[in-house]
Image (cartoon, rainbow, N blue to C red; front, side, top):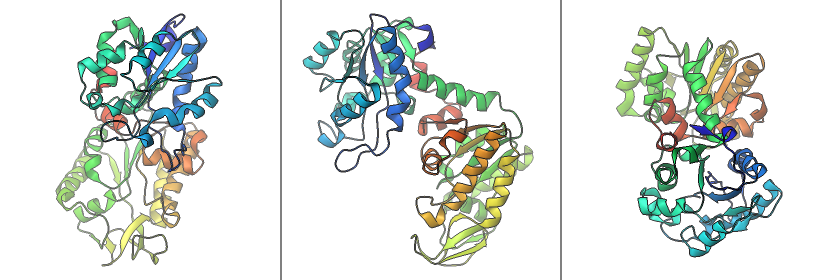
Length: 396
């Protein structure tokens, strides 16, 4: 993969696929600018070389055609603050105006175009649409790792309209791939993976892959209750994937056969309703009373998980340990986040998967205390499962 550091952009017009799919409030104000900031080093490098930048991205899930709430025009002022210069607005990506503005860009200028998904051809991977996008620049940079697992026009198809030397991976995309490979291929032991979130079904392939690599596999979040039932436990009204109980039982047996220390929570913080003000108690994870549900790690499980994490040299974390969005059920996730930070400060390497676990680390103030936070979510999961990502393969 060609990288930014071995590419000179002087006098060139780079069309850069970024992931500016940022959350907006009802007044179209950005509530989390992480993805904007993540792309800045790549853009600054191109501009510093004396290149011009055409930015293309998606935002949300428009139903087809223009919708103001999904327009990237609401990002212009924030981007101007980020880059310390004017950002030109080019409107619809297929418009003659957009193409003309792109072709007239001067070195050091930045042009932002509107939501790629206003055109169904984007998600359909339409070659003619991709070719029109390619006309916006003379070199292609993909820095949108979060969409690299999608075979969309802007991520996987338009690269073919550039010669191999003019297809470049941005700093963010390169960093995501390098950090994932570091965990998968060069992990220092003990290697601990922490899997959380609601469903086993979302993580089956990754867990399967990790059983050949990790020393410890800690299971938390809603998926832990399906494992508890697989061991003969009772989980009350807790989240349960009844059709995955046999799978959980099989994963437990395979972990044992491979010598992997698969750890399930010994206890849970339980509630009599799915609400922050519900009545709360503690119960063994396999003996939750009827009418109660587990919503977080219990005190013993928090300590056990934290002790294992602090003794680790490589850590992969994907998925929260409970309903951390509710303050009364955030302590398990916070314990894990703090333990990961402490292990990192003691010399461990830690990779935080995208989505909720990344949000939790940021929300709890541990961003600067871990090794790498992925912006990838689904893309990171698929990469670590061993799947080829169309957006990465297209740069080869």
